[in-house]
Amino acid sequence: MFDKNIARSQYNPENGEYKLDAMPFAAYSPAYIVSNEDLRAAMTVLQPRGADVLTVAGSGDQPLFYKLYGANVVDTFDVSLCAKAMMDIKTAIIANKPREVYLNVLREFDKNSVVANTPAFRDIQAICPPDSRVFVQNMAGCKICRSGGLYTDSVPFASEYDILAKNVRRPFNFHWVGLDSLGGRLNQSYDQIYLSNILQYKCDFEYVFGVVNSLRPFLKSNGKIVLQVSAYFIGDELKVFNKLKDAVAGWARVNVMRGKAQDMCILQVR
Ligand SMILES: C[S@@+](CC[C@H](N)C(=O)[O-])C[C@H]1O[C@@H](n2cnc3c(N)ncnc32)[C@H](O)[C@@H]1O
Image 1: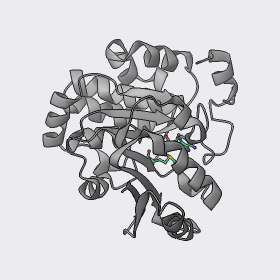
Image 2 (image 1 turned 180 degrees about the horizontal axis):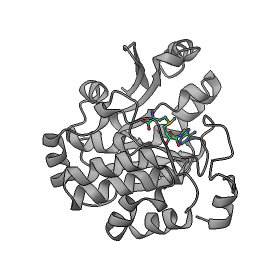
Image 3 (image 1 turned 90 degrees about the vertical axis):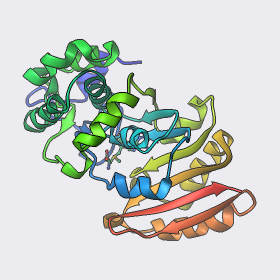
């Protein structure tokens, strides 16, 4: 449950900066404005047309690209409530406003990540889902985005925006929860569970094996768990993913793929 005082205590009152280091993601850690991942390349591999999907919310681009590539149900989760706010702001603009407004909001948030103070937020707050609008308003003075990363490749092209405007008419269903407890929150099964850029921060075998087993009950037949990590950080991930092949051999097959910037491990139920 959102508590304004707990949330605001995570920020330095002097300058509105999040108190923890940028890397540990937590309940109120600022969201990416735009994804730094190659989501088009990922979707080309994952081919989600018609699939029911659960994805990390991240910047909101992960669920949006799933919709763009034809996924059916797209539900989301994230340890940070700022990720939900960023995602809700994007989906509200897409459903109600032209692409110019979307681009302007991203540019303004990049310049001033104390989102509540921006004219761009004031202009769109009336269309923002009430829980995210109240959250952003309560976080006035605190940075809910990370500035300095407008990765233009992850911004939908004009033709893609038109497709999203038809297909994304309401906010994505969201679970505010860390990966460790995700299984305990779910009540439906999915064709794809997309864990993108989470495991590089904690990639020991026992942890990954535990996560995979906790999500297994929520996979449809032939369902996939996608463990994607940035290739720039690659350390023990390949060793862990290769070990996973044997550990889950009784119920799933594991395909480890090296990419230019992203490495992917797809575990698929047999
Ligand atoms: C790891 S960050 C990296 C940014 C990402 N490349 C993007 O495009 O948004 C992705 C998202 O994962 C979330 N996250 C990180 N660790 C998590 C965890 N253990 N459980 C749930 N969400 C987590 C972060 O809050 C963030 O929104």
